[in-house]
Image (cartoon, rainbow, N blue to C red):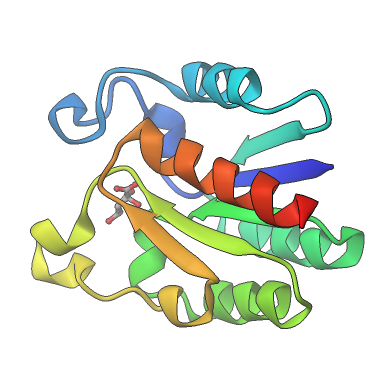
Length: 146
Ligand code: DQA
């Protein structure tokens, strides 16, 4: 099975972007970590975009290919109804969509306390850095085997 690990705007700058908040490791390191965690039967397809339309297209692709998704919507979390509607299609089709965040948005500025994605996600893991993704991968792999 393949797991899509989708990352929204500014996450391509991980490693140099606000390392006090997001740590000093980059997406290449994240991919390597997830690939090391994944069993032989699991392929990690990790992508990042700053473009809302591209991210929405990837969720359509997940629906069409029947692929579960780990999604860090980044700033789109807080205001993108288009992304929310696309995420709803994923979970309504019976696929898992785990919303992840490196930081704990609830411990930060007020505008980060709202997620328009969470209401249509299967669940949310936030505040554990790369471990947020690792926990999400563990869940997706375990549930896919059920
Ligand atoms: C983030 C939290 C968002 O509020 C922020 O806009 C991001 C990253 C996180 O992973 O902690 O870009 O999704």
